[in-house]
Length: 62
Image 1 (cartoon, rainbow, N blue to C red):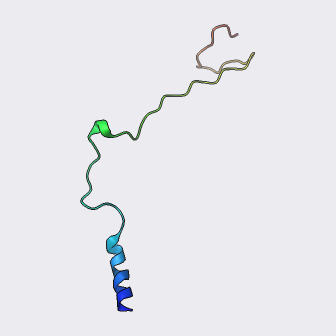
Image 2: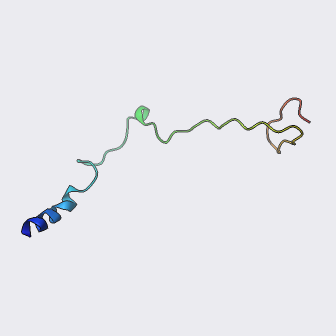
Image 3: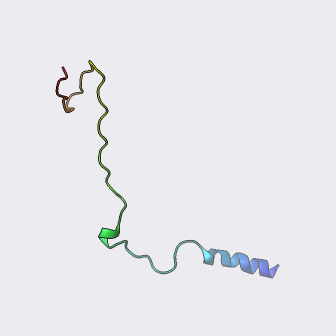
């Protein structure tokens, strides 16, 4: 019983995470997240649809 209690007392010491003090990530050129992704191309408008205000106009559209 004492052995079981001793093992249970050691569980918080095992813990999670890494060994050693915390350190800043880096160098900057090795950090990949957060990453900006390009905006996806807008979907084509169906024939006869009116483009929204401020949207780039498609040549040949009304």
